[in-house]
View 1: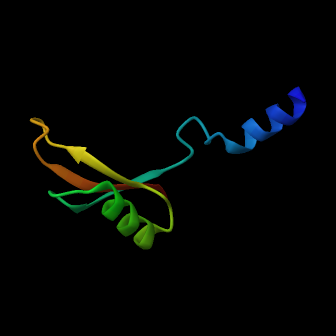
View 2 (view 1 turned 90 degrees about the horizontal axis):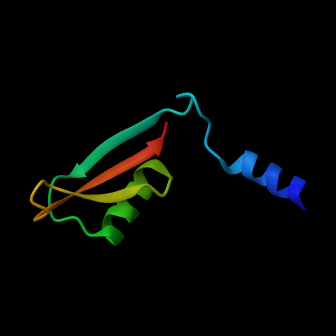
Length: 69
């Protein structure tokens, strides 16, 4: 059982030491809703990557896609 868990973990963990490059794209700078942002990011990059990132005062949110490129 432990061996199976070890193999599964090894395949699911991202590569370390900077080998996986992450790309970032801001789709729109304000008015983000998580469902819409997630759908648009998935359509563009075929990865579940949409995030709503707040400004400093947390009054507005940008739609940001982060994916492995």
